[in-house]
Amino acid sequence: LVDLDRQFFVAMHGSTDDSPDARETPLDRSVCQYAVASGAPLVIADARTDPVLKYNPAVVDGTVVSYLGIPLIDDHEHAIGTL
Image (cartoon, rainbow, N blue to C red; front, side, top):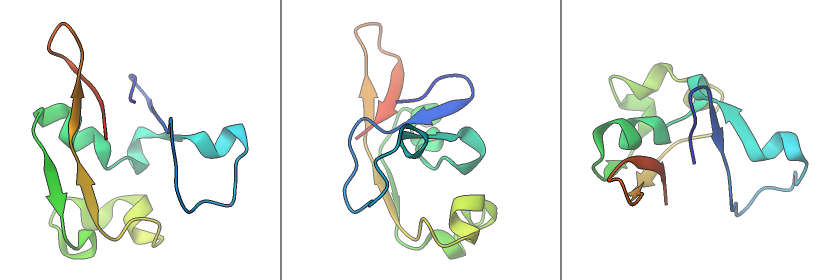
């Protein structure tokens, strides 16, 4: 889920850090924000070579290499996050 300046992780797999800080990230590290903004599914096979995402801090530090996101749409047809 996203708000104006953060992305929240409702569920995670593969992380060993279950602290509250690990459950959110600033939008400058978010890849999901692009699927939310477009309202369309986003498939990135290799974010390291994607013209936009290769500069994202989460890609640069190796946290994100590939991404698949399907926007979650609320009752008012607004994308509020991704699955």
